[in-house]
Image (cartoon, rainbow, N blue to C red; front, side, top):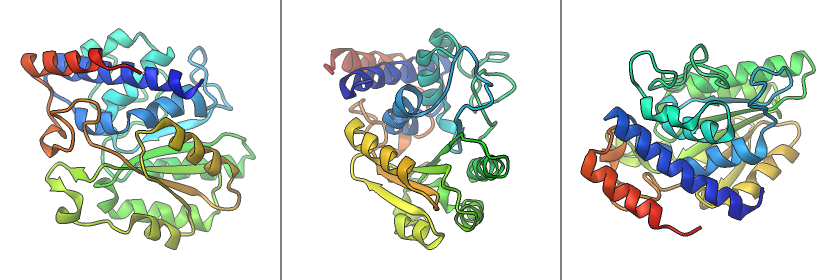
Length: 274
């Protein structure tokens, strides 16, 4: 797809994030909106996947390590055809397909159940290790939050990934600068993020604007061309990107918009031109 077509998909994903979290009266719009372009690029351009055969053996794998941003993932997957995107209107409802965190037993196309922060990257690393042992061609992608990388388990996984030279693994860090309690650098600073991954023998790609499709295209191409090392893409993003009153506001980490906020957000998104 062209950059323009991917931007149009990103706008649709943002609308469905708002639809889903409004319908649920809960959820995590802020980090879903900051990672929207990453979700779109992965599911519409980067990964070898087939919605008609979500369990095909040679598919690329994706693990949402920051599992609370499931609304963004679900929106991209729904638009890609894994399930009707209208399912987002049942988000987080009892018995619904789309729960608050990804569940591989409930939703077609989900490769790992996640939600406990720090654990998803370990799962992804395990998938990549198996891919190497079994001589599989698939690649494994995992998305982490910048607050999440305060978890020690992230670095245990990074140590193994670097040691095993897992060039089939791409770790993406959504560096939006905010976590549930406020700015990451005042809660427990993970900086310098890139240097830490380099210390664990990762190839590091710093993306100045992770909400820019062209920059993501370049980063993922470089990651795929990297041999002998896993890659970490550190992308600088805006929490709540696309909805003015949600942008750079930690309060939108984990709450759904009320009726008035929903109307304001949708009016803004519907007025945007791609």
